[in-house]
Image (cartoon, rainbow, N blue to C red):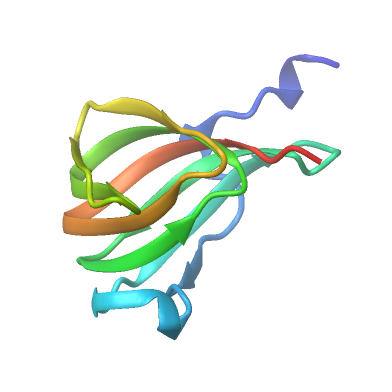
Length: 119
């Protein structure tokens, strides 16, 4: 390994993928999303990049552990029991594997993500 293998997000590696959650998961709005995965480990269990989402709400069910750092915007995470947590620019948190509920973007949101998916 050498210094050239360090991944610098500012270098903007790769192209962005634009998508929407599956139609049956969308609860409101048109939550168009974009992801730019800057790094994938050789085993494909560890990924890091930048995600952006437009206003809307959809159901989520995490099989992966995800570290998030909100760079802009406001979102609300709700668990399956209806408990809510509002996250905004500057917030840093982990969503453990097994979490299910909803993700709602109130103001267009941008976050850095780091994901670990256990084999």
